[in-house]
Image (cartoon, one colour):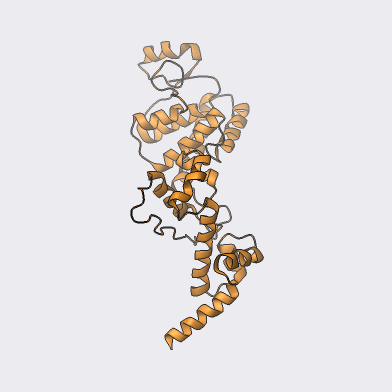
Length: 282
């Protein structure tokens, strides 16, 4: 049971979560704020999203987070949605890039639709769509090429023998880079820190300790060049195409970074690699 005052973020997200993942037969009842506890007792209902009840906000987490913990819902897609809902509900739009959009959508709808149950019905469809995105499409960009996504192999050995054991977030970050590197190769330190729930300043300082003594930016550039080398050696893509597929702004930028990393231009590297292959096969 929730209170009636044009529900927006949490008070639509939580009913969606309840009906989709906890109790599909649950009935959501909106009543005025001052009547929630009285009506909950009369109807043997469970109140939520107000002070003094179990299903409420705790510290910097919102009620959606509590539902996930309380009902032991282990689903990475729901965790992604939780960050978006938390950011939108608390005006901490840095929690997730999608939080601002979610907030704008429901602020607009709440001005157009005054019936709480009509708003809930529309909101259920919106969260269904958001869940599908979070489950299957969260690492895709609008301009992704259909049917193909180039992934970078970032599982290089990064700890030397005898080095102090790396913290758990390093493997999470490696997996994130692997999962989210699309054809544009776009992943930012802030985005990584948000998803790992680690302070970006700390992540920036600690990154080099566990990733080949490189900064975050240098490591990503190295991954781009490694991928470019593979494409130069195994495909007939033009240099412009390879520059695009490895996330460089244009071919001249690609040429400059490639030469800085390898000591020679990509065209020279390709010719040398081709001759070497012909010699090996002869």
